[in-house]
Image 1 (cartoon, rainbow, N blue to C red):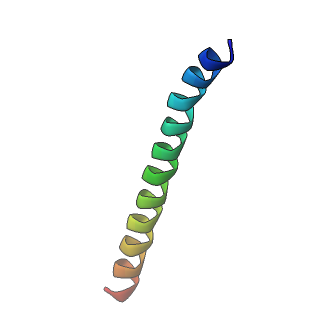
Image 2: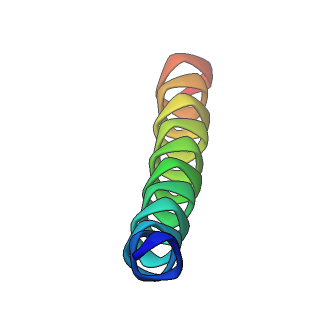
Length: 40
């Protein structure tokens, strides 16, 4: 039973890490765009 829970949790944690990574990239891009707009 424990290995089944582990198999279900691993894809979820991987998806969470991927989501956090995408969000951090989007935030960095938005910050860069805001800086460019301010400079322009």
